[in-house]
Image (cartoon, rainbow, N blue to C red; front, top):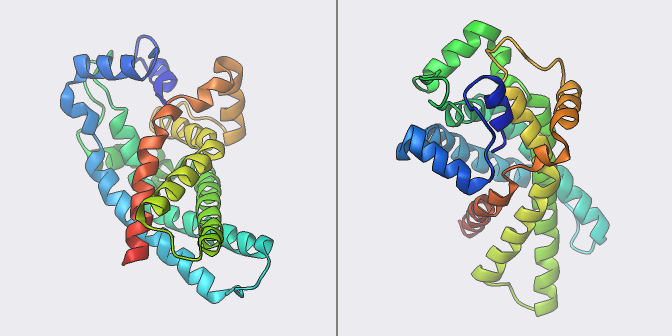
Length: 257
């Protein structure tokens, strides 16, 4: 949904999707059931170290700059926001090429093009590096750092700040389900301001190897906004709650461990 207009420009799609259901139906009809999992294994490889690094780096930063229990709410929030933002940015530097491959493989459809552009992850890396160099694998990286730092800052900052407040009010540690719902709600809220940035960087990713790259993130934003409107930056956002549940569950598991 996020990349459909880039696919139309490249001749892969002949018309935009009318919605999530139409997207699923057309992908199934033209590319088959297994195409929904194309790029999934590299996403799994990316996701586990990303989450592990996020929580490890965030906790390390908080240990280096401890905040007293009686510190003000604002100071605690700022410390948690900064720790979460730095953790998100540092982890992305390591796994960004994997996220790039996941995005390109998932959008590598047979429709219109007649055949797929990439046979797999390594073929994707090889062709992009040959066409654009290693920098092609990091297209949109600055936006990615900004977006993930914003998301992680809001998520970790809000979670680590709100949870102790709730526990003090209830005079006991909150259970699994309330903790999950708190993390789930915060994850959804955090994705709202970060989603347009994610869309923009994925659109920039789609231009690597095509010879028609956006000159900058500002140019990309202006072009997309002028031609497609503000709604283009939020396409597919309705599916975000499904991913938010995974983040909430992982957070709880790391806290228990």
